[in-house]
Length: 259
Ligand SMILES: [Zn+2]
Ligand SMILES: [Zn+2]
Image: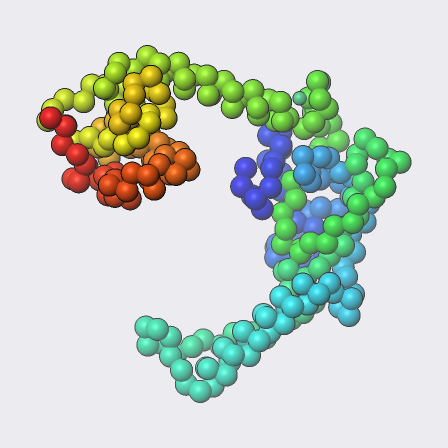
């Protein structure tokens, strides 16, 4: 779900760049055309128009970024002419002069309209040709209950709640004093990590009772330590209990020896 950092619908693996010249794709690779359906902010939009911004009308932030590209190139070429070397002693290689009209981040104006609301006000988005749009076929699916693209917000919340409940059930089944990660006993010969302060996962065990195996080899234990430590710090408990050195006790060699 991390492409462009945006939410994605689970029903399409089709990503395309705008169909404009110099979008970084080889010739013949299909791009987003006027009339296509794209996903933006969980909604399906019809592309009404794709138009490059005239070079003298670039928005200030695009212009500034472009000037940065040019000055970095000038600086590089100046260093190269002066005979400067790379950190490992090789001569600098020549870089081609950046071309404004071919820059992958140049502003392109895209006009979108909600697919199911052909009367709605079109939305203008300015983006670079290298942005990858998730596209949908004409027959795409929406949730019957809320009309959102899957996974809809309700499904996502439900999944989170189910996970949290399964987690609570698992924690409640762990016998007192056992590892809150894997749920198994911690013998006197095993290294363990104990978190001072209230027990965030099993408050009924009392203070200073949150304990985990200090073994990196078992993901169940080490992931739980990582998760617990994060929550522990979020609650500011590491400030109240400075005696637990940051991270140090997450190492199997430096964990408290249980006796
Ligand atoms: Zn829904
Ligand atoms: Zn464990």
